[in-house]
View 1 (tube, rainbow, N blue to C red):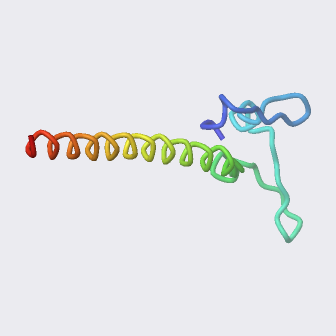
View 2: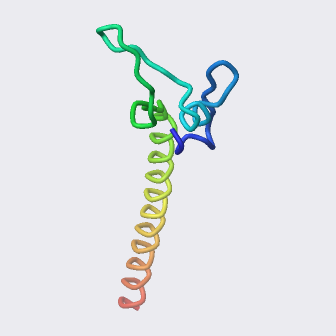
Amino acid sequence: AEETGNNFAITIGGKLLQKHLAEGTLFGVDPNGGQYRVVSRDVGVRLNNWDRVRASALTAAAVSSFGFGVSLALLIVGAIQWGREKKA
């Protein structure tokens, strides 16, 4: 839960989840009806950020492809110029 602090905050009853965990004021109920104190290892976070990851990967691929295209075009132009100079 600590790694998500820059993106969002989870509050329960107006108090941050981290504060509940530090103070030991958060309890859960097991399947048998018994109470237990919730600790940080009981809390999990799943971020649905695949859209940002995919956009970042596509941007990197587009930039790399553009660079490759420019390099290839310059190589072809250079080869043509070299061939023309060799003929003359």
